[in-house]
Amino acid sequence: MQKKPYRDLNTYFRSLFGSRVHKVTVDAGLTCPNRDGTLSTGGCIYCNAKGSGTGAHQKGISITQQIERSKVRIARRFKTNKLMAYFQAFTNTYAPVAHLKALWDEALAVDGVVGLAIGTRPDCVEPSVLDLLESYARSHLIWIEYGLQSAHDQTLTRINRGHDFACFERTVAATRNRGINICAHVILGLPGESRRQMLETADAVAALGIDGVKLHLLYVVRGTALETIYRQGHYHPLEQQAYANLVCEFIERLPKAMIIQRLTGDPHPHELIAPQWSLQKRETMELIDQCFAQKQTWQGKHFRDNARTL
Image (cartoon, rainbow, N blue to C red; front, side, top):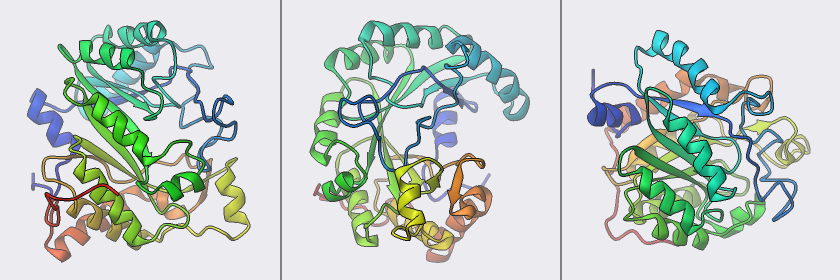
């Protein structure tokens, strides 16, 4: 297999376990301070009422059942029995630590689960939660995935994120040196952001010494504030080639050791409003590969060791 010009997740997993590891999405039925009224009731402008969840918890499907149901399909398609339980929907540290422990213990008890990936916000992580994850990290692979989206406070306000970049920096510092791997989520194409600002976010993320990054395209989902903005003509999504070019430029600025967990998102077809090309994931991935090849570039080519945060 030809080596990729960036450090991808599959290669990382194989280096640790000698085989493929598949992430299984788990819906724990949690909520978000940006939804329950603590910060806001509307959420981020791109997030709908499902919060990227599957709805499995609402249907009464337990954590164990969710993972077990996925195991058969994954074993058949990907020929692996090693799984990471990915708690994705809403904010998965936003609950009493005893409740979180029960959820995470249940997931780790399923045969074949080698670790946890916890999706959350940087303003929702108490020291006791980090202590718990640190205890798991002594025997399992633990990733915590912090939604950053942008390093620009003006953008974070515009998208109703509810925290600033300094909050992200503080939480990363509190998480570091605990054996917990840290991943940042970044969205490209946020309203009002220029190419330069998006690449400044790359520099800011690169400077923090975190372990991984997930890149997402901003697409318009039905039932969101962004849908209203889009229909009013005040937001225009990125074109496919422009997105591919941005991904390439973003990764050029990241350190070589950082794991690129995702290059684009997976919108639900029945929820997607725009852009329709975001459903063409394979084509988008090919365009990104072509961009790397045409530029003869690679992850870290423009990484600056003295990169500073904003």
